[in-house]
Amino acid sequence: MPQKPNRVLLEFEKPLLELYKKIDDLKMQDMDMSEEIKMLEKRIETLQRDIFSNLTPIQIVQVARHIKRPTTLDLINLIFNDFVEMRGDRNFSDDPAMVGGLAMLPGCKKSNPLGETIFDQPVVLIGQQKGSNTKENIKRNFGMAHPEGYRKALRLMHLAERFNAPIISFIDTPGAFCGIGAEERGQAEAIAKNLRSMAGLSVPFISIVIGEGGSGGALGIGMGNRVLMLEFSIYSVISPEGCASILFRDAKKAPHAAEVSKITAIDLLEMNVIDEIIKEPVGGAHNNYKETALNIGSAIKKHLSDLARLSSRELIADRYRKYRNMGYFTEE
Image 1 (cartoon, rainbow, N blue to C red):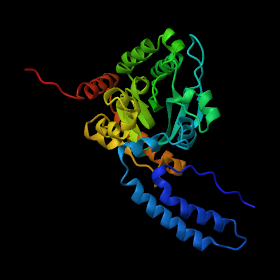
Image 2 (image 1 turned 180 degrees about the vertical axis):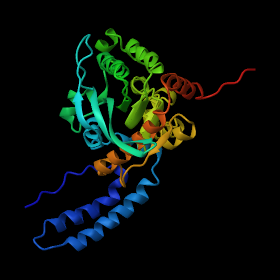
Image 3 (image 1 turned 30 degrees about the vertical axis):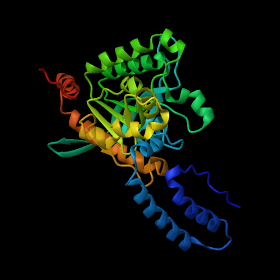
Image 4 (image 1 turned 30 degrees about the horizontal axis):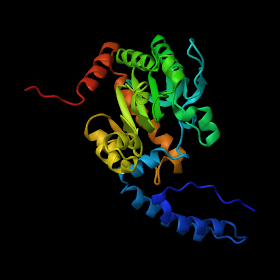
C-alpha cells in the first residue's frame, strides 16, 4: 500500500491541507481515482497561485528558509554536468558549509558568421550548502561557513582566473559563522579578502541568491557582475528577528522589521541592488526542483552570453560601476 507523502506546509499554506488530505485518501483507494485527483490538483494549483501572489515579507522569509527548498548541490546536479567537487582551503581544513568545484554548463550558445554554435561551457561553482534535515544541517552548520570556507571559495576564484572560466556562486546562508573558533581563525579577514579579490576578478562572475542571503556571509561569495535572486528568496544585512531585537527591542516585531528592511527580491530590484528576479514554480522552489533549475539555468546562460562580450578590463570596470552606483549621498 502506498505511503502518504511527508509534506511540510507553512502556516499560511494551511488552506491547502484539506485538499492534500483528500488527494492522499484517493490515492490509497483500490479504484482508479485519477480524474478526481486531477481536479483536486488543479484546485490546489489555483489556490497556491492566489496565496503566493500575495505574500508578505515575513512570509517570503519563511519560504526562503523552507526545509525542503533546493540546496546548492541539488541545483548543481540538475543544471550542470560533470561536477567535480574540490575540498579544503590549503590552510586549515575543509568546510562542509561551503561547496564548490568544476563543472560544465550545457546548452550555451555562441553566434558566428555561419550561424549559432551550441557548446558546453566550463565553469567554476561556489555555494553555501544547507541540509534538507536536522542531521545534514548539523553537518553543514546550517550553511554558515567558517573562515576556511571563504578561503576555499577564494582558492576556487583564483582557479577560475587561471583557466579563464566564468564563476557562478549560489548564496544560501543566514550569515557567516560567528563562533569563537571562527573569529580566532580570522572570519572578518577572510570575508574582507574575498571582497577585495572579487572586485578585481578578470572573469565573468554571476551570483544567485537561492534562499537566504544573510549579511557579510552572503557578500563573501556574492560580488558578481550580475546578482540574481529567486522570486521567494531574501537578501539582507541582518535577519528580521535580529533587526527587531536591536531596533525595536522586541524579536516579536520581526514581521515589521522584514517589511521596513526591504529584503525581498522585488524591493531589491527596485533599488538596483540585484539585476534580475528568477521566477519560481507555483508554490515555491521546494515544490518543483526541475522547473526551478531550468529557470536558473536559462538566466545563467543569458547573462553569461552578455558578459562574454566583455574583455577582462571591461569586466572589472563593469563590476566597479555596478557597486559604485548603489545608493547615493548628498553634501550640504
